[in-house]
Length: 414
Image (cartoon, rainbow, N blue to C red; front, side, top):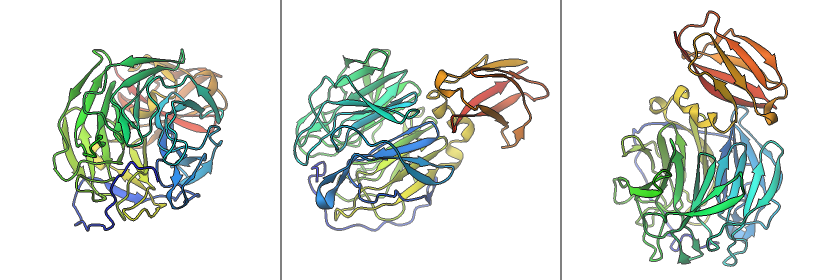
């Protein structure tokens, strides 16, 4: 087992049921129940992905990749990772591609600097320029404006890092940026919200767990410390999280008392505040996987304090904290679909990228969830949408291309 968690307390604690915000609901288990630790997770468009990782019981590493479809509540196996099977690479998504960077390819052994690109349209992998910092595992990552950002991590339980680098997908090049503002650490969590990067939690070289939150500004290339998670018992190691609207949801993992933890928290990036939400149901777990698709978060898998693997997967819905009309922006930017002008008065134009021009169909949903009749003309990659009798307001334009469904917020004004 990779030694991200130095101490495992071989008991679990009980938690009272909290009347907290949000609800959890079970979803389909992963067909392969053996992946438990150091799993990668990300979402592209309307699908979630998870793979790689280690089966702790027999110290076996995996190169599998699975895709989750929330519409059918089902998993489909995708192209295997072509490199050496590994644990805990950092991951970020740009457009239709995911990037897996660094990780460990042998139990208590070699950490690597490799960067791999997964193309979700072609279901293919390609090795890219290697990460320029030291080899490491349990680094963290996020993406902003067409660039990926990777940093922190450790070479096992030595050589803890705080350096950060940006990756330009257009030129396949890495550039060093300002070091992470907090203490060098491993097992932190990284997110991006509204053009800012966020890093929280993790452990340092003295095995001290942190409950801090840091914000990265690409314009000033600087880090700013934000408010800590409020409870002294809740800083997390090996936690997981996702972004919905302006909020970061993160939890699970191990707390500062070395207890495996059920609690989940919402961090509002606009208010710099923390609110506890509904705890993760079932056995408390660490080193699982999490991602968001539209207005819902998904969390599961991992191992408990006895190193027992769990193939449990749940959906989180925050209710009034985030609606589809605001959360839809989370999937707008990755499709490459453009609408202009938007807002519009009488007519707008829709342009699809080259990889999304096959068998396209459109539907329009209003704020009450009702489908509206639309007048849309065009073919291939360019379409014209006439307002017709549509009222002023906010809509969701649903676009089906290549058996994928994308959503764009559409605003009609006088």
